[in-house]
Length: 303
Image (cartoon, rainbow, N blue to C red; front, top):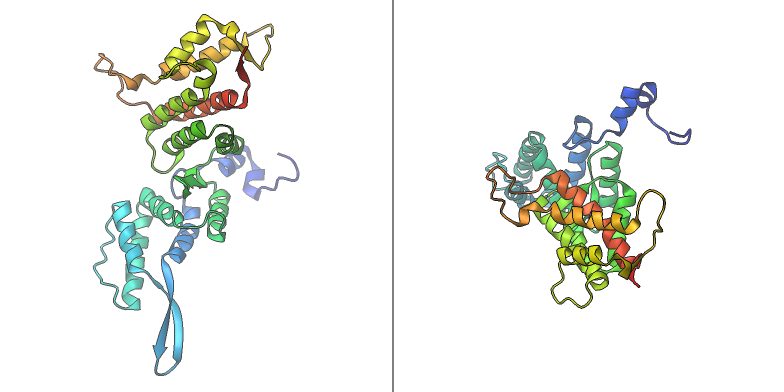
């Protein structure tokens, strides 16, 4: 840490404090809860003008019934609130009931935050404010993009994130597939097997025109065979050194991605896993990111 990187007192006091400061928190930590609710509850209200015989035209922010009910439906929770929301105090009671339910369920809390986030403008102040809150509280989640909308995604290395976001500029088709893989691996709604499948398809889309340009149905398996049989047909921007042969490293990376998607076929071993794990999916997506960038950028080309 440099002198310019400020950290709170406890993080400077000991190694344990320093580790605690940077350790990411998967759920809704106690120090995040109130700030997160303040952000969320503001999104679940609307300004309503009211006419009073005593005070004339006034207005106030009041909870929106449909937002409360939608939060229940999407998060699959019951707030216990049975009111119709016909008047302000009843709507306030409904929002209070939602708060209580979310404070008891971290996943539901984050799901409702993700839901409200999806309705916002990506570059707007509410998105920036939420990202500031999540970052300062060392949340494992950050504001990103899910299916073209703002959404909660895993907070991973920013360099890797930027590389993923720039891939589509190199190869639109592979970039879209990689974006789908990224969504299934790192968003709030994770699907490891789908993430792995899209990662493989993204590499096939980027590598196919280079390794199997004449194949109408290119697969990663065919490309691996072609590279293994005649590696001299392709150039690689890395040069040979005394320890490794770059093309063999490339071949190993492709092989590792291909063969570890073991769930694409049913294993006769009844004890074999039916789905790839979350860690396997994340590793596959990051590996695919590197491979797609190599092929799309021209780092690997035909002689």
